[in-house]
Image (cartoon, rainbow, N blue to C red; front, side, top):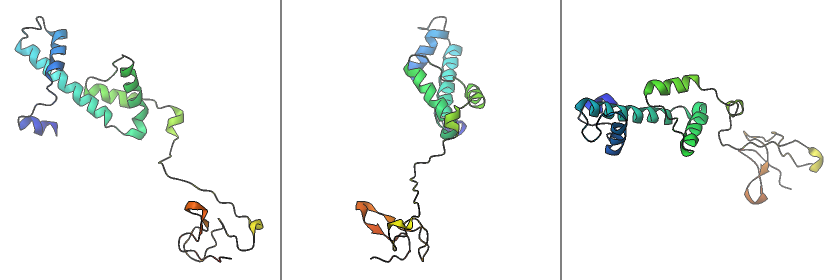
Length: 157
């Protein structure tokens, strides 16, 4: 929790080079900034840090394209990262995902389709689901060796 960390004396994302960069943009005299300018620069640095952290940790299946697009734009020299938590919220609420990426439900597993065909021989029950146990039918394991599936019975002949 950010508030608790600050109460314990920690400063969130106080990076001297980032503060100097902001001071060069906002201070009347960047070499001798006022206390108000320093405080403003520190606040802006912290806000940017929290905004980017919030964006990067948002729901990847829903906002993954937005995150990738933002990273890619930055790589091409366009900084479109939001600078405040309010801006991140607006990004996320108004984001329209590509239709192709909305329908992707692949979670990285494997799917098999076994067609039941008795023409291979009388004892060939591949894919039929007719094993006598809880199995899913026969299939080929590693190295093409036949197995009986989970708990299924097989006539080896």
